[in-house]
Length: 138
Image (tube, rainbow, N blue to C red; front, side):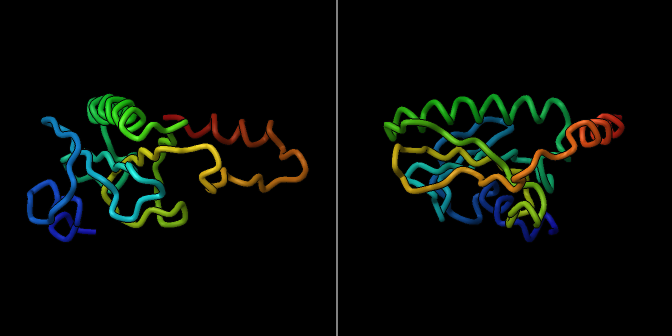
């Protein structure tokens, strides 16, 4: 997606309204308009990047520092029992807006949302999988 067509970039520029909850020089946080629970917040870098894998180390540090601040505020404001922090990278993982963003989702006992269900009934070949991952560090 081109930057000029990115809804998150338009929110950063003030062209699209949002319920902003936190902002600094590098990061903006606003309520998700399709929340899992009340208080579900998105934290984004102001600079357009397709996803988390395209951020540099400084941008990652700024983003994650803001995520922690936002998570603390959301947990306190909503009296949540817990918080999920996550991101979807790529269409197959559920990414819909192709601008890096982190979900901060307040969770409550018995809120009806499930955790990931395990795919494997049998143990996968951990040794082979670990080997392949190790080979791909640059």
